[in-house]
Length: 472
Image (cartoon, rainbow, N blue to C red; front, side, top):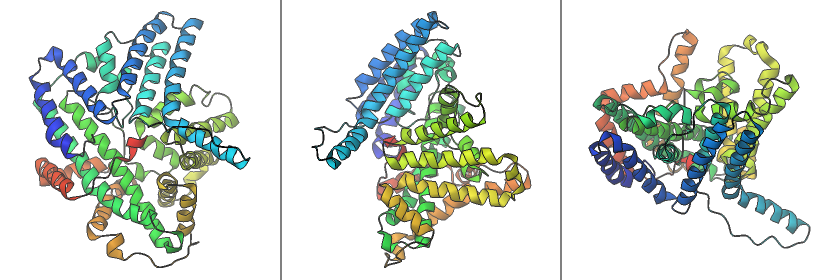
């Protein structure tokens, strides 16, 4: 049940908010749990018992870990818990991929492929797995206390604003709010405004621009010209940012409607002057998770320069694999890791390069990288990238109006302006308006209610484009 669906906007959300606000303060968590379980069951009913069962196991194991923290027994308990969650993730997310690879190998040597029934990927499994691992790890490290109530931990895992596509929460950040939080009409108003902005980003910009990106990526290699290939890749860069950051905005807004204050997940990533900076601004909850629970755990920068660079490549390769069980995602991760590694090797010498060149180069690298992320196969990705750099057939392409209708071109222009305008402030050395502030200004003039209504009207007349990160 996407947030940008009529069912959610006109039925689930109003019914939940009425029930939630009418529930006495001490019982609101239970209303939220029931609603969250119903919300998750709508999209993944078969996986819901697994989520609940793992939550119960986590609750019990975390208390034993806390009692044996710093001992071999505690480390074993943590290892068992982490292995359990990674095994569940591996089965649901990667078993189809690995069985397919084995099948291709067997076919190559003349054997029949293995009999296999494809496993359906439950929505949100990657996000939930990372939250469970961080919870157990933080308890073992002493950075967090185990949950006092099972209901608090189950709500933490299933809280519907984030359960299907993040952001990735950490128990230690929400523990106090799950036990007690302040509700006010002022905070609820902020929540509605933030939700409306996110909905507009998703429906009015991302879904409109998707028409261009989908059209270009559906073209054959002999139809692609450099201009069309860059247009498609650039359109997808706008689409995925407004799609995912819009969803994060909606999650943050829904949280405020429930009295929660969630951390930000994006910070103007397209104004970055390096790939390293890009990853401090893009999907912050994931990049910080990988730093704190993977990079540091395998040694970080504590074992010399060469090992540090190896650790960087490991983290980015696994980051790509986390996004999807396909070689395109692995290469996307390796692609970003390679540039972060190069930046570390170059070091301060990058400062000799004019800032405008650093920004332009970083943006171009990110856009090229998105081709691997968007393409349906490695071959298609290489075809698009080849066309971007002049190696294309240049055959007959669809008419401009068919490939890029006026509303999509307008949405692309608006999206590009919103993400690039903050660069002006960066060059001036003064605070620049963020993408959120720019959208807030638009909302203030049009009215958040009007923006919400406009998005809803647009939803009834447009095709529904699923959230990109639902499949991760």
